[in-house]
Length: 450
Image (cartoon, rainbow, N blue to C red; front, side, top):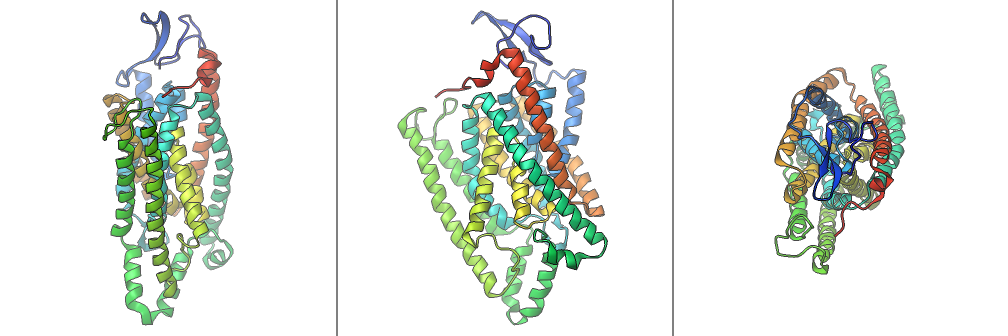
């Protein structure tokens, strides 16, 4: 933190916990400086010990480390909003990488032949995520803090009621299953993905004459590591990163020698958009062709994401919104991805798991931005990435075991809801305290100019 402070006692006069008000002789004023992340005094140590546990719960909800930004980074550890967002990128990456590996070996809760990750939706999301994440992280450095706070509160205030409603729906489905009314529930609830098992049985009986082709489609659908979807996702990420690195920023150089704040450099944004339009069109035609083939054999008719085009567009916009808001606000992209996937018909466990894998691509994009623009020190990146990895490796694995054993996957939706409420309260607290300490102009002034 480098806000100007008043070197007098009082909660609203100083810099808050874990920060010091020190005279900056260069400007002749007192400024706030946060202690090093490795100055682990007892109170900081307790917070660090709690973070992996909360991180594991957040990962279960498909959110990663983003929801820790408000309550832990801004409120408890007293980092500035910008610092908290950058540290949240580390938390998101650390929590996503190990969790994604675990999820590749998890199976669908209602069909143990299928992976828990829906790779078709993951393809569509990742057409939008890399570009949207770059736009969000770039804009985050320019917008005044007050705008970001209002966006955070407004965004979560809209999303949380939707998430609560979906949680009630999933809980009703669970209760119906407990009463052995699964068939009735499948007919009456249009958001239920439990239709998978019924659909598979129907496909098997109705299409024996096309068994060879259906077997190929089944093998692709049930594969833990489907080559084509993974290749499409990685190519989208690589394409965007190559173009992004061609563009200079005030803190990083262009790999082709462009200068920041020039029209030639700004033209790279148009190149990025144009390249994404071409690639998205190619992938949409591929997905459409695959689904038309599935229609021909009446295979897995409950799941169509590339057709009609309106459904594809809605999922794509969900991916764009997830990448953009996650990067600009530093929150978990699952706040958008989980509700949109539930609306598309996925059960809660599949929605949160697919969201977690998408979080990996978002956080990887943001982490590259951190490294190339040197927004955090290396020890800070290592520390918070490590804390997130501990949560992803140990705590999350325990919760996955409990959910699989007791079939209570719907709980992840309520986890997402309460983490959203906590972040709303944290944002309100941060805005009030920061405004009182450093003046309202601190919240309203531009953070960076070109």
